Image 1: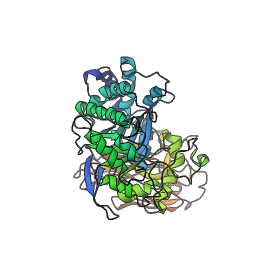
Image 2: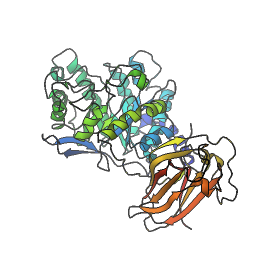
Image 3: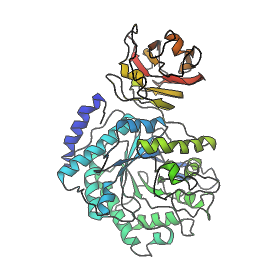
Length: 518
């Protein structure tokens, strides 16, 4: 797995500390850890009582992708996956600990009381937590139960080690379970089957996590829906019953209810009356949305039949969540293949129907970037972007860098981002001048003449390049590197926003450097 050089020592230290997690060793914080989330009260745009929601340190809703952490198959995601999520405007990752599902399904292989297993598992989680940090993302660590199972001893052991280890990482949240409750509504009152017993088990788990991580935001319950079985306040009934059970008093300033929008009585409540009724009483977050029934398994490249609900005319559940300001997490955009295949369906709907969101501000200062590619020498993996598409491994032949002062390694010119897109670098010193070096190489065989690709580049609104033509600048040759230099100050908040706008064909860039002048 590729990691950036400055993280290697930190990750090694994290693995060592994982051996002592039972003794409450703690994951070292990074300067890029975002501030803790808060519970806020916002206006209900449909005219009901104010809604209790979760907000980031930028006062934005949590919008999350999904990453699996487990001991099978691929085990974990590379750092580039987290950068890709950030690049599409997401600000969080739901880290699914899928070994819980495997254990409860009877496959075995995971044991949080075994030091060897614990060291490996903590190491995988910590890498994900660090990747989230350096990409400006929140990390929601979720013990992912097999519906509707809940192995008490296993989950208690997991949280006994995980909760104290990450308690000082301010960008980390805990989601204590996954669909471990069979229903809401009448069942939420504990009148059916084992509902009350299960609620007590989940309440005891909350108390354990809260004792070991007093300041971490904890998400509880996570039922499969907000279906009220005909009751508008079904999920609120469940939460009230949960709150009344014996245990440590629940602090709703740093506790919320996670829920999934698979069952919602949407025909009875087309304006999401049940969802709004819950948020009027308790803070919550939709920790798992899914695509609507109108998208087929073949389109999504999946085999399961689970789909999200549709409130009124909102085909995508995310539209309802965005309209109400709730935030969301989405299933079936897991891993690069699913993300690249399926996220465009979500984004197109958001753009077409007017609920597209803006990305949170960048919080790091990684400013030497191999655009579209992994870490190469001093050029870090692609980060800090929003929008555009990438091309890699082109050209396959030599790249001509003759006459280019301080050219990038040839591999930097083999990957690019194209289209209309931005790069934002933060954490710079407002009063200091910085040199911006933009690396270009026209490698597309479709460019054979001057004027076939032109584009504009600006920084914080100042024009840097106008109708720039890489092919013309390179003497009418492809695969010849070009570098353009500019010197300027960041804005008053220490940020530089580079904007690439197409004129003819698509804007593109291969590498970016933002370095202190002199």
